Length: 184
Image 1 (cartoon, rainbow, N blue to C red):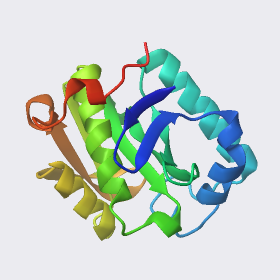
Image 2 (cartoon, one colour):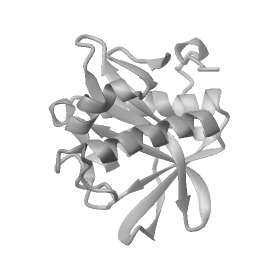
Image 3 (cartoon, rainbow, N blue to C red):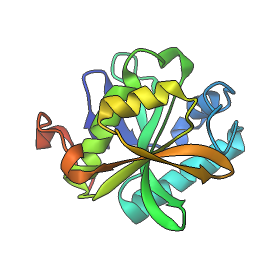
Image 4 (spheres, rainbow, N blue to C red):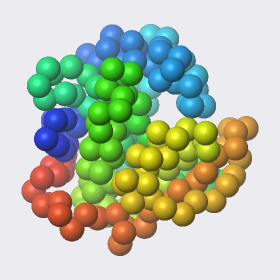
């Protein structure tokens, strides 16, 4: 089921069929350098996919597969999912892309549509992005998407920036509602 579509990407739910390709992505130490979970083997990736499917059922959102339209190959994932931050459940933006898709605008493209989906289709009040200060690429992606101010905090024993976007700022005036497909 297609959740959103950009000029180069299709966003859909992750499934067990994605296990080999996603394991290849999540087992790359460079891809997982800033992940609190670290490198994932096949078993950890299977558990991640199961957790994503639980998120879809319980919250209607989660990390979604990003598929390149031209090749049909898995680029990575991007989505919002529940995350406990200082004892409060937040909807956290997260993404991981295979290295061969870095520095080509895929992350920015996906993040824009995921944020629009969260605000326009799921009526979320806010979305957060948790980013380590030295992860300059993710800071650029979040700023392009409209995240600007942040607070510093500890998250899983790491110093991070917590960016927050409120619904009034996140919904793009250029995005037509029919471009985002509600999975219900």
